[in-house]
Length: 475
Image 1 (spheres, helix red, strand yellow):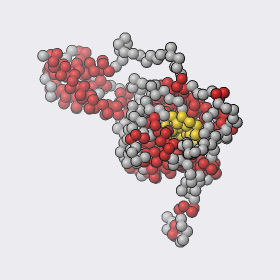
Image 2 (cartoon, one colour):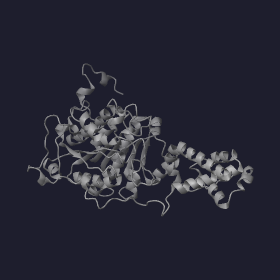
Image 3 (cartoon, one colour):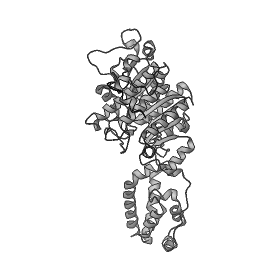
Image 4 (cartoon, one colour):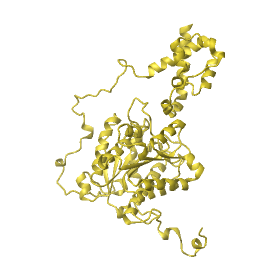
């Protein structure tokens, strides 16, 4: 009977874990809190007396039990509805799950073996030698016959092309998908080339960034989609080689694990402490290292901090609204110096107020700027084609002006747009809005080059001039 009861307890507990997994992940930063000793009411004394000292110590450790009962009240309620024998099985099941979940030396693999004898070990990232191709003068190459490129731009293949073409912005694809666990982000660069919308005249400013800036398509970075970790190093190398020419690397993903190599590459070029990051996202992406993997789309910022590339004070976050971070997570972010702006702040103070605060923080910071834009910062009514949508986000009309203004205000040294999933985007609205975000940034960079104020809008676009209505009704 005891064994059958224990088996039943394990089954019930595993089901409970599966139904609560999202909440557990959202609250993972709670593990950073000091474990509190649970005090049980006297009414449970007889029931708890059948537990061993080890079992009772485990049950009283809130850092252990909150995985199965989020509050002390929930834990007490779970115990009260069980018999003494069932409580023993319940605690045994908790301890068994923890043992099976954690790493055990000798039982589990501490590293993932690779076939180092493979003659194609690095074939995925080896670039074609220039000597294989006909000789040509360095510089961008314009393609004919409607071959799609980012922003309809000419193609550049090497750093020498970027230098010879005096390139301002090099748009490069990074079709990484494995860091998210959600399908199809790897096709983001493809759909962004074929949908269009990055180039042409901007209605708001009457600026065509392709005429004011030297923009190129730098192709796609090679990705090992069997290994996110191996891909990180190569992405970092290519982003760094773009930045070293003085061009702005504009990376089209791919999932958000790309933020790690993108920011690390810019720090390589400009130095630690000289680059600030504005992170637009529904999620804070500061996964606290509980995952068995050191990089995924939920933890690029923590990895950057752990590897000593940036600190929390280098970050401004905009649009947070997912299940995490919890209250303790937000307190930790405060301690680390993060400046964050959740949708709760937007609800309380309004978007215009929050946008001005973000612009002011970026301006006062005064450093070189990288913008990391996860498309799920926008509401899923506009961005359906993304892996982890969250209701209650920004509208394109709110996002486009702040991106244009940030790219006009600061010395932009990098930009990435990530988590575009074409297979989940039947109406191409995600690609459409994503292209508009990229175009807003390019317009902002052109505005800065032309010397325009960040609030600049072309006069002919804002007034038909048939009367003096604006002047007469100025507030």
